Length: 97
Image (cartoon, rainbow, N blue to C red):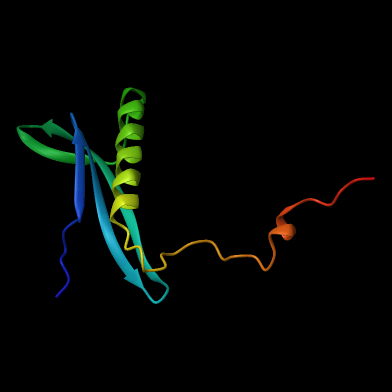
């Protein structure tokens, strides 16, 4: 039975990031969910809207989540990625004479 909980969470102040591990026919991959908590009428609520003052902290949490994901990828499993090209020379523009 698969867990319905994030594999990792990060927080700073009122901002939260949840890291989820997923599998598909193409392999394993991770996704993020970000939210901000706030109090309304004595109850904690969540929002996915962020103010301009949240952005630096949010970006730091996203970078930390990225680092955590890179450390926890299975080395022997091909994770979802862009397809490889037949030749690296296809990505190089032709020389102009």
